[in-house]
Amino acid sequence: MVKYLYEVDIASADLMRDFGQRVGLLCQGGENIFLNGCLGAGKTCLVQGLARGLGILTASLTSPTFVLHAQYKGRLVLNHLDFYRLLDNPASSETLAIEEMLSDPTAVCAIEWPEALPALRQAPALEIDIAILSADRRRLTFQPRGPVHDELLCRLSKQDVAKKSKAL
View 1 (cartoon, rainbow, N blue to C red):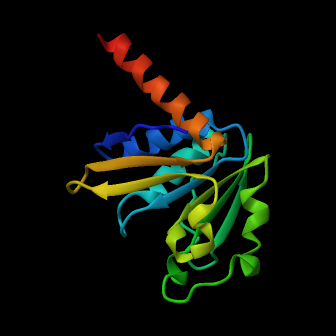
View 2: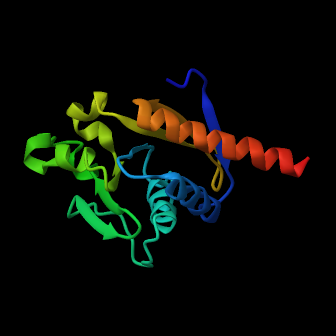
């Protein structure tokens, strides 16, 4: 288990997409990415980049707020879920068949507003909290749950260390 706090500051929506792409490039299948943050924090921008990193070539990736789930195929399948509409009216995870998506080793599952489904609180995931610092700046704080997500965060942090070393 990763024992340290990992944070990244992002300066624009384009850089949020670029960061999401880096995460997508590191995914190997079976990862669950849970995105927390208020409206306008950049959750969908991050998922757009994640899709690019998975080799999904679509300019039309939007948040599936009204349909709850959208699926895209690339190097891996991306299951993109948005539970905003469920915040005031929680559904059961059985109704949504989410367990199958969360345990699919050939897919990555990105969930916006995971707090709407209490059953997800203990699910293995890389939880990303997005805080708004200013009109453009965001701070991402990461919390991995489970070995797959510990490893993903470890690879991501090693990539950052390598980038900083090259800059010196």
